[in-house]
Image 1: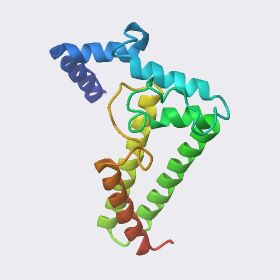
Image 2: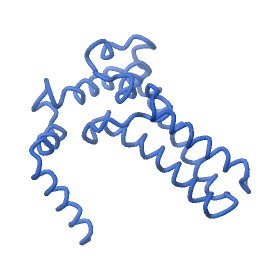
Image 3: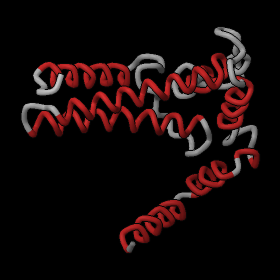
Length: 179
C-alpha cells in the first residue's frame, strides 16, 4: 500500500516538474480538449476502430489511413486493422497474442533448466506486454507512447528484435520436456 502511494506520488512529481507531461496527461484524459494537436491521433484512432463495426469496411477500404491517422503503418496499425476487418479481425489478433502467450508460458514451464525457463518467460512477457500497451494506446486506454505492435507494425528494429526473441523461444521449445 505504501509502495503504491509512493509510486503515485512519484508520477505526480514527474508530471509537475515538466509542463508538457501535464498537458499530455490531460489530453489523454480528454482528447477532445485539444482535437487538432495532442488528441488528434487518439481521436482518429477511435474513429477508425468505431467505423469498423462487426465485420469492418473491407480490406484496403480504410478511410482513416488516407491522411487522417498519422503513423498508421507503425504505431496505429491496430486501428486500421480494426476499421478494415472490424471486431472479428481485432478479436482474431488478440486471440493470436493470447495463443502466443499461452505457448510461451508453456515453453517456459517445460524448459530444461532455470535459465531457459526465465528467458522464455521474460521474452514472452516482453512481447505480450508490448502488444497490450499498443492495443491500449490505440483504444485510448493509455497515453500515446509510440510503441509498435509486435509482428504486425512496419519493420525496423522492433520487428528484428521481436523475431530474435521468437527464435530464442523456438530454440528453448526444441529442448523442452513437454512438447
